[in-house]
Length: 110
Image 1 (cartoon, rainbow, N blue to C red):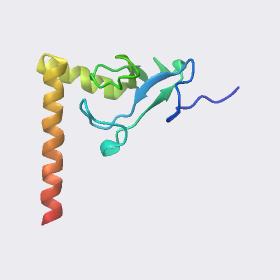
Image 2: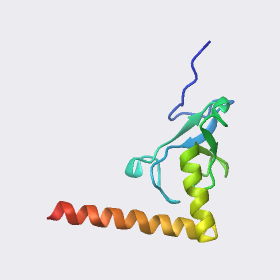
Image 3: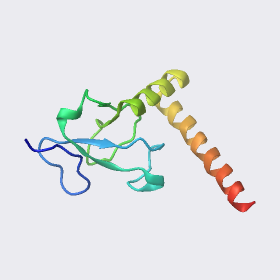
């Protein structure tokens, strides 16, 4: 049996689903920004460590539904619950990312 794997780039394989990695991101992050990656996964992976992601990120050619690893999905569900909406969760995540890079710049400048 052929081993299933994620596929980067190119046209969407017929049965594969859009997905992204676990790197912290907000809408507007493109493929490659701060290590954020998008790719295609085989549908057999859904429910086996991958789930529908509620983060609100989208590649317009993909539509609204995409998948991510289950811990990332849980992180976003918790953020949305805590902040009351996807938009508020995205703003909070954006602030967290900004703080991280601000501290990193300060350490590098020292």
